[in-house]
Length: 190
Image 1 (tube, rainbow, N blue to C red):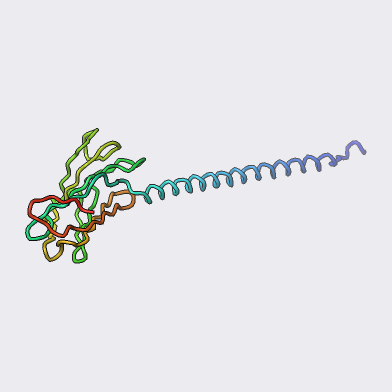
Image 2 (cartoon, one colour; image 1 turned 90 degrees about the horizontal axis):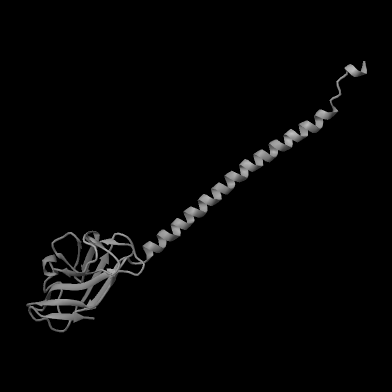
């Protein structure tokens, strides 16, 4: 009769092995999920750092002097300056750059497509509106057409021009007008 009796001692070891394998599989899946989340978080952090660095630096920089053209009586007709791409910067669409001109008495903002912004390419490698590496553009702002006159901009006034590219920080240009402004004469301002 004893031979017909089933001995279940061996099943305890088998059951323990199955439970152990189940724990190992669950732990492996859990660790895969945790590692995946960690890699995703690391990638997002890296993208955030790269975006922040790109936005903290200006995409364009001043290249050369800032000039103003005198207009009778003692005010400014135009302001000109050269722009180039900052070192390591990505190409910038010059039609999307904004310009804010201000004095202590008036503030005016224009866009790169407005008629008060005259763009002349001095060094253009590839045609189009993108300012790329090794290219230079002359920006001529028609100050008098922006509503600035003797009452809002005159001799010895401080003029501020803020160049706002679509990506990156703005480029501030701050200069003081000369003590005298004669009609049709160009002055380099500091």
